[in-house]
Length: 151
Length: 151
DNA sequence: TATTGTTATACTCTATAACTATA
DNA sequence: TATAGTTATAGAGTATAACAATA
Image (tube, rainbow over all chains, first blue to last red; front, side, top):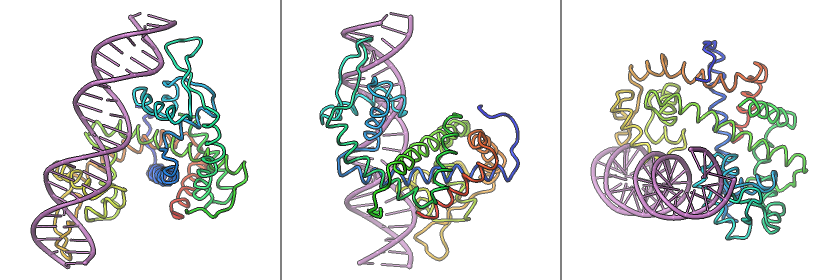
């Protein structure tokens, strides 16, 4: 089921397995700290993710945003509702497919992201990843990128 | 708030921040695949975590297991209930503190873990982490260990 | 016939508060 | 007075299934 049928050697098994736990612990620590910081702006980690995705990719449909964040389209409705109500994103119809919206960052949304959220979250990230030497930090980034590409 | 007040340079900010997203993606991918495999034994990732913790540490109280897995003690009750009912763990009173249980693996629990679950989950882990060269895998493990110790 | 957004709904997960027995 | 386990309960988060508009 996605494996290759080969039995990994015991040490490789232990190494890979502890990597999994460590990965989860690191991700959980980071997410918890991010949520704590974002609470001041009444945002969840998911909301921040939506803004970041839109900043990076430009206007997207609700479903496409959900795809990138692993969130169901029915769940996206409420998330976008709130962000729209707060004036951080805008719904306009996709010109080429009028079933879909083109969700885009508003100017206030972009300002909040750039002037406030990015600095806040960067500090959290640095507080965690910054415990590493710059070399290890860069290495970690490169290795994780490789993991992501392989999926 | 855990930070050190220093403004990280823009590239460092981006590097650290993308590391955060990558970390989360990798952890999510791993957890999803583990849950899929464990479903055959009607276990969740959390249940597997309990068994692994007990295997590694020996008998523990419910609360201590929860502490290590970031699960509330009230949530632990049901998790242990199910595992006990399936004969995978046993509740006995802690000899030194009769308020607490000493939860321990049963022989069937240990067998399930060693003979079946570890091979299954190791294959998932290897399928993900094994996309890296052995050097990068070991390096990733070392870097993540360092992150965990720093927390 | 398939797809986007939507709604209602049900389900899972989790934490909170109050209780009991021990400490 | 504090702590381990328990229980009931309420809240958040999520997915599922059906529907309307559009493709």
